[in-house]
Image 1 (cartoon, rainbow, N blue to C red):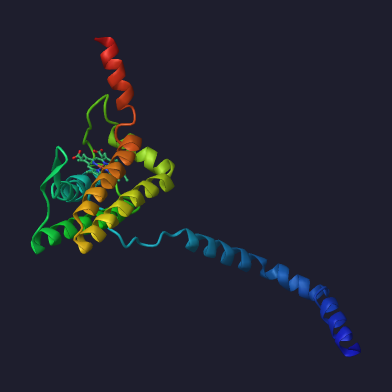
Image 2 (cartoon, protein in one colour; image 1 turned 45 degrees about the vertical axis):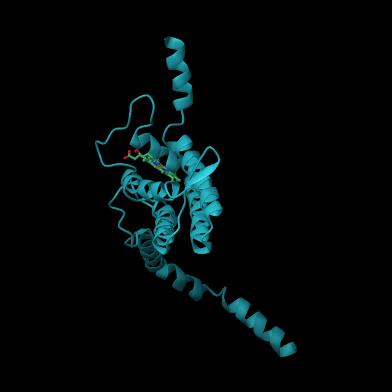
Length: 205
Ligand code: HEC
């Protein structure tokens, strides 16, 4: 016990001896350079693995919209009567494939660095936001964008389950949830002022 206390006193007094402090001061420039180097290294961006060369507009047009159309078009009920429904194995496979495309498209939408549209592409003036405005909204609150993409993922998973269970009623149910997921996102990012502009247009007539 006594030996331990003696050793502790030795160590603490040793660390305050003059030569030691001088030695530290002499090495100060070396440590500062080392710190700077470490800091700079931490600033170097790691090379991204994803290559989001296509745009959100492209994803909508080439994956999201056609996949949703296939699901919506697979069941039809007119005047309460089912006039179209999947029957064959091929019908169910087609619905499942489209649902998988939607589910994975929701992940593609979240890849960082993906632009909304190609430079110079314009949206309908006065009704839709322009791509750069949409991009600003997304970057301001990425979490909101991600949770709306998750909404699409949830709805697409309902459609996957419905196809696997070969359940027509569930396909129909997933179809309306998919529709809601599209609209929730569009109302926030694509045409958030469209309701207002329709009111203004009818007032101006
Ligand atoms: C997470 C957000 C989000 C979800 C979910 C989403 N969209 Fe979109 N969508 C957008 C944005 C943003 C645009 C506007 C891009 C642009 O044209 O500048 C857009 C544009 C579109 C367009 C126009 C594309 C073009 O060529 O101009 C279509 C069609 C479309 N969406 C269909 C759908 C359908 C169908 C669904 C649901 C199955 C869906 N979207 C779900 C964000 C979303």
